[in-house]
Figure (tube, rainbow, N blue to C red):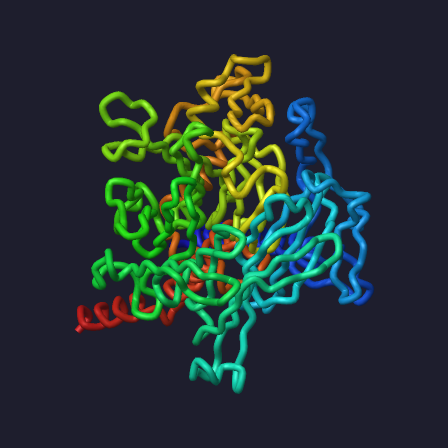
Length: 547
């Protein structure tokens, strides 16, 4: 390569390297505004501006008010106090004079390990103002509303112990899993059930589901089981173990075989269980075992599910049976409807099958882990590695989102537990045109469905069943979504899990470009240098010929 060509190549290397490195640096600089407050803890004054919640990207609609659904106000919210009161222990408490319970969204965050940033239990109102904040525990997982108690939630959290505190489980380090009830206005807490388990990782429970006043169902990751515990006696009164159904040669490695991360008691008394490492959701009938005809997914069939989280059951009275689920490693949110294979009609019969009825992703969505169908017809999504909570309309438009550091579970108070108050997407489609805004809610609340824009721009349409929607169809959006589909998600999510909290998928991509460019430039310079192996070989060959 002659001199001018080398200069051009060097210039190209430099431009690509600067642009790629600049993109990562810009992401870091932008994140600094949020990371200082979005992943930290309260400051010495207890200012909730230092919590894990950043300003909302758009103002959320009031799901009780149809007018608000059609008139969203965009813009950042700069006020962080939100009328919240401070508890004696430094926690931020809800001021009921300022915050209606129906306007609160509660999030449990997992925290980060590489940067050792705190996990948080935080509630914010429709304007993004922090109404409640606590960071007592090392990690927060499941959050559930308490029926009949407007400002009260139950949450699952863990703290890490060592030494003498682990004596009963005979390990040097251990985990205390605790299921607690807290009043968000007073800060009053009551431990419902707690248990010390050996080890830390792959030993922490992710979900507990209340059955009645005295019993809860525990998704026990360590024991690879689902248990029913009497919280008044701490006695396990029933247990289903995955070993009764699954071959030990499938699933994960020893110590984290099934990774049962979710359990939900269905209205008919069955247990819907997320067996993450088997890529499937099963229905367990007490005394009968797994109902194979109702199983959603199969081992390594990633076209259906890929290491999913938090499946929610939509009952027949809301257009089900249907399941909303965070298809985590596929970076998408899905709904599956139970239908008759012959007629395509919704069915509860044993010979029914699960058919994908809705899906959503956008370029930011990375490792989603919760998706709750709201009475409005929208879906409230946890985007764990996208560091946000997003409310998505049926057509896939994000009409509101909030930056939150590594969230795990979310609940909108006043909408029912998880997806119990929302309709299936088929029900929403069938109801279009019944009112000016479209009804479709069978809950009796009378909440009109949000009217999104369809693919062709017409108002009120929902995409066809099974389509994965991503409404911002720019070239850039499509390119990022395509790149995600081509990239091994396990590797990407592993890197994001260990990376500093501000790093996202785009930063990994630009970082890889910068690294490859630097290596390519270095290799080219070596090739061009007089010490290059090829040059030495040519010189040796010429000397042989001269002889």
